[in-house]
Amino acid sequence: MLKESIARRYSAALFSLAKDSHSEEAVTSEIDSLNALLQGDPELRSFFLSPVIDRVEKARMLKEALQPHAGELVLNFILLLVRKRRENLLAMIGPQMHEFLDRQAGRETAALATPSPLSAEELASLTQRLSQLYDRTIVPETKVSPELIGGMVMQIGDRYVDASVSGKLEELRRHLLESADTWTETSPNGKGTTHDQRR
Image (cartoon, rainbow, N blue to C red):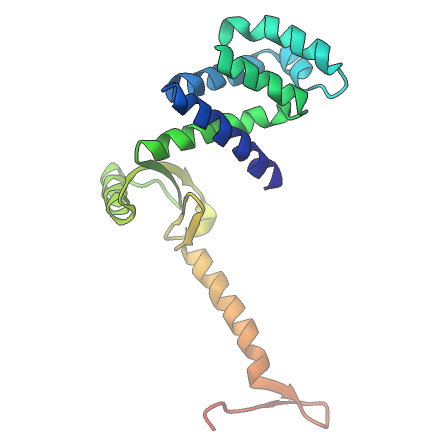
């Protein structure tokens, strides 16, 4: 969680600079391309993430290797990550840049988990209701989680809603365990005594 929070500070700074030059989408696309390049080249990725390579030498070599793939803003941003020893944040920064783009355009992703796949009609209806509720265009990302039994689990930004049957059963179990102490206490002879709370 701390690592993600640190990455978000870098993402926010990069997005703000990109916004100043009206290049938010282009910069986000370049970050995506660099992440894809690193994922597709294990040797380059290992070099990029290595903590033991001299910072100055690493920056020089990365500048040569990445210059054809990135503009000045993104290249300088990558070199900043290297100087700060934050290279491992780049994989998080890509998705976060897309989140900033979505918010700017009035879109927000909703992660939906259900025990079985939703039909196209169910998904369209749910998306419409959520868009009206949150007053923005909701973009659903669905996942099938059979362990939920029924209902669904939803996360939109930092808002988490567990409306699954398994979630409700777990909530009931916790409630029963918590309320058990108010019903039973130990009597002087060591045996439990039950009290009627209606008295």
